[in-house]
Length: 117
Image (tube, rainbow, N blue to C red; front, side, top):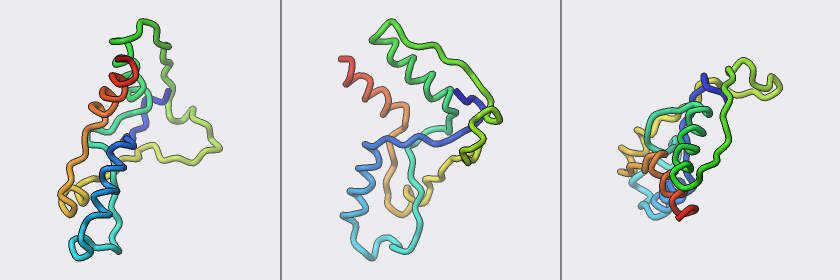
């Protein structure tokens, strides 16, 4: 897992909630020609740390989880073009739509609890 690249996780639950909010907003409230970035709340995270967090949450319910191995971004498949730092800014969504997304950590905890409880 890559440990030195960062991104912003986004849960389907949060994405559905913001889409529903956008669909119900009056036309004059938001600029329909504007671009809104959206992702879950919380710090940017590397794929390694994201997976590590998930596995630690799974360990609360299940004893055996796979081991993770770190690799650097430069060792990533060279045929795939992907920025090393891919973090979105939610400030426009929060300000214009008055919407505060849930944190990616709380979304993961909720999903894992639903699966294993």
